[in-house]
Image (cartoon, rainbow, N blue to C red; front, top):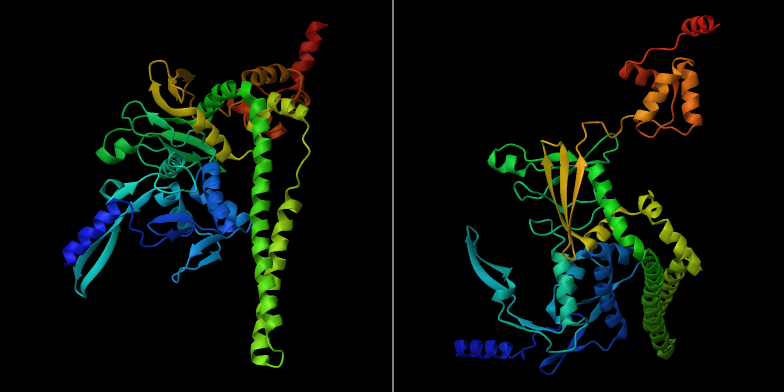
Length: 467
């Protein structure tokens, strides 16, 4: 009888009619799911999908919700809906559950018995998707379409830096982190940072050496490579800079509107709770102080919560006022796209997301005969382009330019190191590291390139001979 009962239960699940527990945002209506009638719950779940899709990762969506002090609904054990501070697991439960994409699922977990010294223990593990008992898309109304749900789930799963995924964009300055691959062994290049401030990227393929004890494949500095890819990328996105600026301004307005709407719904719910607490307090007998005092305390707590939500609603407007941007300024932004890209205030994660939108992968190799770095850029549209860069020696990027060296060799005939430093600074010339010239730096550069020092005696003899 138990086997027949389980078989009947499984057959009902395969038909998509077995509803056991409804997740937050849904209620059971007969043999199917229906959306929660609370519009505040609906908009909060939609906001989670929108922000994950916009920001590219669940963690960034979590940080955004924490930044604006927005709460998410959770299902309690008694079936009620409560509002709590968002957590990473709560967001993952939403974006990984196919129910929110309009699909019916059953049999996602399995129970296995384990044996230890303490006795028999029961462990629950999640099955692979192809092992689920039932997965039936488009069985009820979801918060997003099934295609959009699968796209978001795939995007989040690709944030794990495995062999076939690029990983989520991070704060480092390396533009091709997770995108560049070794042509010789096919493995992804490892990104490391060096320098005094740990901001100089270097790509190297050391996994073959670590795994198999073989020699290193390739390794090169990342600054010149990133500059070359940036140049090619800006040439592609340059014609659409005005449209991109207009879209960015529109997204900024929509982002502010999303915060206002979410906080407005929270304020409406808080005011309803305060009004309900007042009605309960007003209906109580004032002589019964045991009841009246408790209801008065609940009413006061509800009023405090209303004031807190009102403060949250006023904070985004005060911190990010809606700027009045003229359409002509978008054209100026398009012409200064390179300046905006290179500005130190531009977030590295945004630049990496732009790169991953246009570039699928970069395959790198070193031509030892020509001493060049060969890059093959695989664009998303299917086009491939090749870039060849001269491989610099260690420290060559920060070396002084040849024109400055030649100018110093001519100036030492008539000027001292102190005067040479002033002349170089007056003409806007910098050192290899981008610093201003000083007497000590001119002396160090002369010593490195074996340039003779200025001597007034030689200048006097030269004038005498000319006379």
